[in-house]
Amino acid sequence: MRVSLSRKFFLAMLAVCTFAVLGMVFAAYLSLKYGFLGYLNQQAEERMERIVPRVEQAYARHGSWDFIRRDKDQWFELLRPDDAQPAKTFDPSLLTVSDLTGAFVRFALLDADRQPIIGYQGAAADMLLRPIRHQGQVVGWMALAPLQSVTSIGDQRFQLNQLHSSLLIGLTCLLATAVIAWWLSRTLLQPIREVASATHRLAAGDYAIQLPVRSADEAGQLAGDFNRMAATLASNERMRRDFMADISHELRTPLAVMRAELEAMEDGIRPLDGNALRSLLGEVGALSKLVDDLFDLSLAEVGGPTYRRERIDLRVLLPVVAEAFGASFAERGLALRLELPEQPLWVLGDESRLGQLLHNLLENSRRYTDTGGHTVLRALQDGDQVRVQCEDTAPGVDSASLARLFERFYRAERSRNRASGGTGLGLAICRGIAEVHGGKLTAKASPLGGLLLELALPAAGEDA
Image 1 (spheres, rainbow, N blue to C red):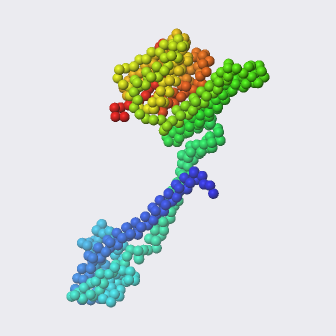
Image 2 (cartoon, rainbow, N blue to C red; image 1 turned 90 degrees about the vertical axis):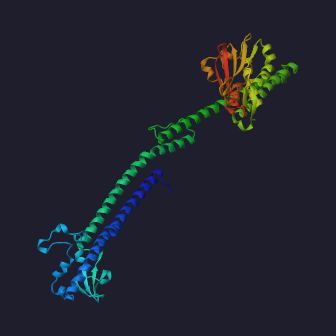
Image 3 (cartoon, rainbow, N blue to C red; image 1 turned 120 degrees about the vertical axis):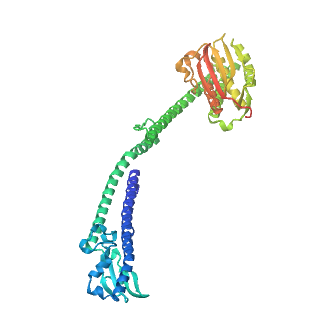
């Protein structure tokens, strides 16, 4: 049988309060029995200790117990409070605690054989006994009956009423607890039920689900985190669909060209010569480039464990990469200038992957910069960071496209697309490599009229 969380909470609250009420009633009973009644018995026992010497003196004067049998007032005289006045002028304010609780009715006088002479006529076995001695002999016993043994019907009725009152109070507390537990289970657990329901819908593929954030406490934080998770999943699902659509499109184009070329050769429309083979080889190269870029992108995004970690001086690496692009820049009528400081620029990372990142930055600049322009590749130390900037001349990138430059397969169509055969993955790969190295790659408009790409990497210490 499935028990809901609200019902569990309700039963738990009810059980805790039930045990608390029962414990309170039991503790009150023990306190009355062993605390208050024990205190009264102790007061009566102390009173008896003071009476015993007085009774011994009275026996010594009379030589027997007949004086009490003949005159019972003698017994009450012996039991009077210490320093009390004669009966005619007795002051009630002089009564002790034991007198006020009826201790004098629980006293009894027994003879040497423990037979009752006067006083309480209960069983001697239940009484507290003190010997009365005369000339070294036990001539009688002073007895005190416990308060529990002489409880009257009125006292029993009072205790029963107290028990009924305690039970009524306990039941009232339980009822109030049940109402409070019901309210708490509905109020406090309502956000959890909403999250549980929304989670089922999210698992079924409803990524548009959002929860209302009603408070700033943990429940509100849970709802806010759930909304962010749902938005992230929705974004990832859109990116997955866009990614699949982009890959399909990128693969379809070279495959369609290759198929058309082959069909034309098969139909005899186009001769099978060197030009045809070179065209087919170019399309195969485009496919290979796409596959290689996809592989590099997966390494960049998954990548940390596969990367090496070693000290690298970018002041040494940057000239090597720039030199490799000298000829290709010159072929397109572009100038490449390198600006480096005199001191080393140490970073911690994988030299081949950082070289790939710099290669992609320069390739992007070479591919999309107008003929006659130039590119500046510079590096500098900025506190605990090393910054590498790749800045080129026109054309620039509009502000709407700047934020999307690092998306997969995205191209700024109007300003920098030159039908260059790029896959649109180069900058996405660069961003992945930068993040694996603990750095950040950003894009903004260049004062030169083109694009400024800046890579910020943590600087490596002397002992790294």
